[in-house]
Amino acid sequence: MPAGNVKNPQKTIPKATMIGVLVVAVGALISCVGALNGWILLQGQVPMSAAKDKLLPDFLNEKNNDGVSKKALIFSSVIISLLVIANYSEGLVWCHFIHLQSYYRL
Image (cartoon, rainbow, N blue to C red):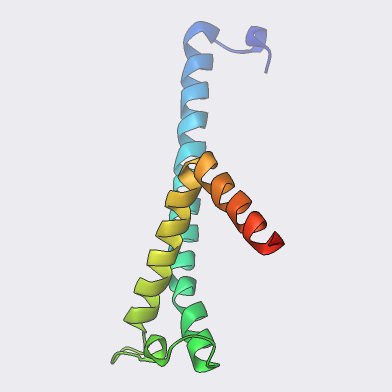
């Protein structure tokens, strides 16, 4: 919007910009919280289903009274945390990648 069409542009434009930024930030925060909630609900299902198909140990398929496998949630959370820690340092991931390549070439 051209500043010539706004009353008192020195005050109005910065206020409108800040309000717009705050609205976008609140929307992004709500979106991130919703995505995190969905991911947490999903992450326990994968090891539980794999245990049901006998691809992972049976203890991951044990459910509590609410039908939730705490052990599967803890298992997947530990795996995800280890991957995040490994990915935190680019050199660490690259080092393991090179090590695996050299191991499989033998």
